[in-house]
Amino acid sequence: MSESLQELEQEFLDYVKKISAFEEALSLVYWDLRTGAPEKGATQRSEVIGTLSGEIFKMKVSEEMAAFIAGLWVEKVNLSDVTRRSLEECKKEYDLNKKIPAKEYEAYTKLVAQAETIWTTARASNDYDLFKPYLEKIIASKRKFVEYWGYQENPYDTLLDQYEPGMTVAVLDDVFAKLREAILALRKKVEAASYQPDATLLHKKVSKAKQKEFSERILTKMGFDFEAGRLDDTVHPFATGLNIGDVRITTRYDEANFKMAVFGIIHEGGHAIYEQNISPKLVGTPLANGASMGIHESQSLFYEIILGSSFEFWQSNYKDFQEITAPVFDDVSVEEFYRAVNLSESSLIRIEADTLTYPLHIMIRYELEKAIMNGEIGVDELRDAWNDKYEAYLGVRPETDADGILQDIHWSGGDFGYFPSYALGYMYAAQLFATLSKEIPNVSEILASDDYSPIREWLTEHVHQYGMLKKPLEILTNTTGEGLNPDYLIQLLNDRYNFIYKLNEA
Image (cartoon, rainbow, N blue to C red):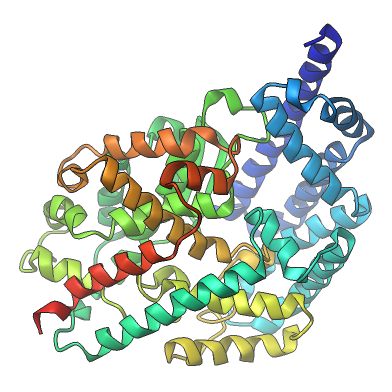
């Protein structure tokens, strides 16, 4: 490599490190906004978010960035892996963002910051009409952006690709159809089963303090580093990685529904462990993030559903749970408890859904988002369309906006195209687990122990360390030897629910 190329490469890395610093500051501002910033400060906070976002946007589409791309792109083969992949990500974002006028983007970031605050108020007051004008503007902006960016077959493909590179409506329609058919068939068996878990166990009162104590123990066993992260309260749970040494997770507690916080914390903990174990060599580059939203979700769902919802997990941890919550579950066996926390029933809230019905919640959102971005439905019809789909897919109909169209924060942030990542992550997780189980045959013994480090180390070796250095499909195929295959999830669900509902004992 010539000396001039080395200098240009270093200048580029210094430049993206500066962008990374601005993004870390912006993430901290967002975290604060979502975890208790005073309501009266929200308007000014939105201005700050808009200003910071605008500056980041300008840096990503600046003449300096254009010069780096022009000078380095022709030398890609001579660059280090980190520089080459960083350049690819910067070019992709440059090509997307350059097509949006800077003033429009800055106005959009202010809009979504305001919309998030309005969504919180609207959700609390069950008032979709309060949020609707903001949602309408966000949708209009997104549809305009898609026109700027362009698309080949479906406008929604452009949004999908931003969260899951290479994913399309054609692929999702096919995979979701197969998964939906399998889930609905299994649900029929579950509903007709002679044995039904005791759902009342899920509503035993457990104080916030006790839920938090148990959850923190589990986080520690999972491998979450409390010296590199923290746990806080919020309305809508999320995880945010400021850097690999500061990854924050949040949750929402309900003393009449311990499952929501306990499993929610395990879920967000999976996200956090991923980011805490990204290779230090990627810090300060665009690569110090998850490979995609789907891969990121695969890690949270791996811990929450594949491991945290397994019988072996509760055989190991139920005694601790009983002791912490005593005497609430003193007379409940681990088998009764396990079957209860994994029972399948139609529900309205996505984040409270059981492992069997969860993908159906995602499919509903996916179908609505497709319709929105294709101009087939507007905000005035959206609430009824949401309610109709819940009735059709799950047999329940929301009575309030908070339990229906206002339950998720995603649309207030303009995150159209994100929801499918949850279901993709579920399928990725099951596929990764199948491979892990072959390479670590004593995984059941590990779950029955107090040391989950072999699992975390395996995930770090195959997924975590790479951040965005490897692309999603590359991670999946390199690790499992094949592309996306929903059969592993279908098999896992059948095995699990045959046990939970004693379907093979009839």
